[in-house]
Image 1 (cartoon, protein in one colour):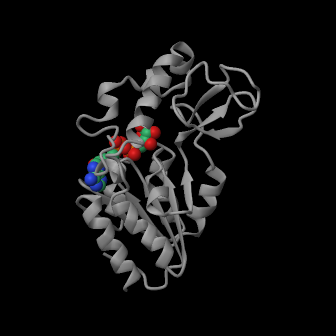
Image 2: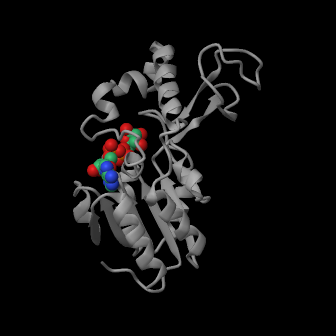
Length: 239
Ligand code: APR
């Protein structure tokens, strides 16, 4: 595995696989979320318009699980937080995940490109609020003082991911790109590796199995992220 010794900016793209060992289901693995739910019913604007209660229930259930006693950041999340603290350059996490496990592990420079499970936004003002308890049609919006205007702060299929301009800047300036726990099935995240290679970055894919994108990466670290990510962070911090 090639780690250049003068790296200044590490960009890490994470997907559902980094939270799998914390007990949070991925989407496309066996018994994944998309096996038991119709994506277009629970993760699209049309689905929300058609049956908002089903969508509210889907995200309320995922939020309950995330906030339950059993779910904690795992060794991979903690290793990335250590990397941000100890690395002499910049570390940016761009995550497709909507959980807050990176934050709870101690990472601070995080871009949630697909939104956040613990947040909601007003459809009128687009203001974003933290959610405490259940979110549903009767939740009163604190900016318009009426019910029916709030939705989960999640990017649904067909919607534009958040902070793409910021992401563009990060990808342009990174010299080491690490993808962790993503199938590379969903764009624009799936295009990031080609973008950073174009700017001369070294690329590493960490996943429990090879993916359809593996051939695009300079090297692969195959195994559970709780084992491979701490190992990788140790190598980066002690070249
Ligand atoms: N360690 C490392 N990788 C793992 C582990 C693990 N313990 N367990 C699973 N993986 C890998 C799987 O091999 C798979 O490649 O994590 C990946 C999960 O892929 P997906 O379920 O497709 O999740 P993700 O890539 O994050 O999906 C991207 O799709 O549905 C949308 O918005 C949703 O953000 C999501 C996006």
